[in-house]
Image 1 (cartoon, rainbow, N blue to C red):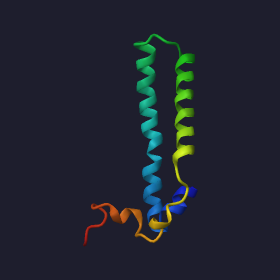
Image 2: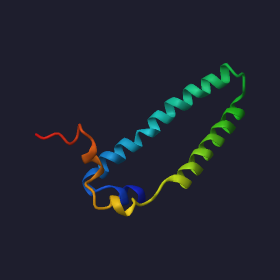
Image 3: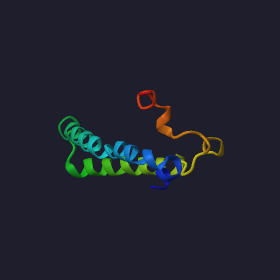
Length: 93
């Protein structure tokens, strides 16, 4: 939440949080397909699959923790909101 509070305006947080939360749906689909592939093709059991998933999520979590800045650089703080840079959302009506 700190990242969204520091990087976005109040008006665009809802859209970005909704977009961000779609990762749960895609993660479920990806995990299901990857599980099927590992269980059928690689002939591994469920314990091995869960171990691999745990290692993968641990590596992803550490990567995000190490490389994600919680606040924007000083030269970006005075710019317009992030969504104004998207051409589809910035069209004149």
